[in-house]
Length: 313
Image (tube, rainbow, N blue to C red; front, side, top):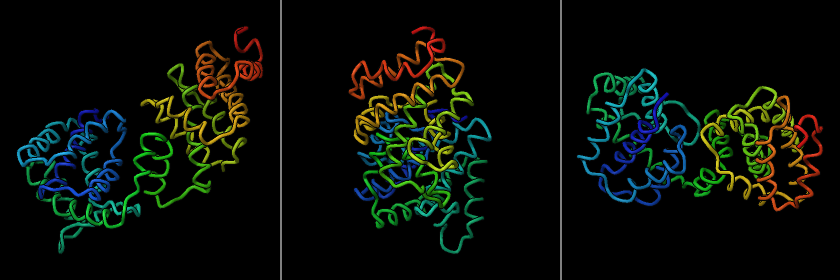
């Protein structure tokens, strides 16, 4: 698995390439941010590091240093493949989910263009900058002309699961059957369920099934989409989710009655694997407090779990 530093260096290199002509307009910055969202497992803290490189022009020397760091940081075939796939996506990124290099230089077949990139990586060649610069700049200009949406940036920070879900489906040429507002709420709910399931640093099969069932029963999510949202929330919780943002976002999208019903659902998730632990109860207590629910409402939800399954708590 690629290291965090390696992924960040790759992102910084992309920003450096965008600065190749010494300027970066606001619409190009917005387009660049959307493209950088394709990098895997970027946290809010990582994003702050990347934004520093967008504030001032990157010099030729910095660009070469970033390239050297990326090339020297390749430790495995997986690292090399990540670079190739990321660069292909960045250069191809037209918002239509196409997985080909859509901006290869005129007269150069796409397969040859990709092969040039691959050979540069194999030989640790600085020619990589030359092969990428023109097409990547063209991609930025095209996306800037299309107009990017600032709420994608907001989603990345405040509703990460929704952002990743819609981004993944977009790349596959698919869309959710659930209305957008409902999907945002459901993704926040999935994050909260994953938070409770992950208290013991593991999400088991029965907990995943309980999460998927809750999505189907509470919000009528189709089975395939419920499973996809469950899988995505499980993957995301392993890298951390902001509980404050999850709870505040969920409160914004729901009524008191919905939150009371969801609290019972969280106890069902906690009890899906054998019994409900003290740590799981405390995690749900914290969520209930953030939901602005009365302590008695928390107790009523807890009592839906048999006493023997919560150790008499």
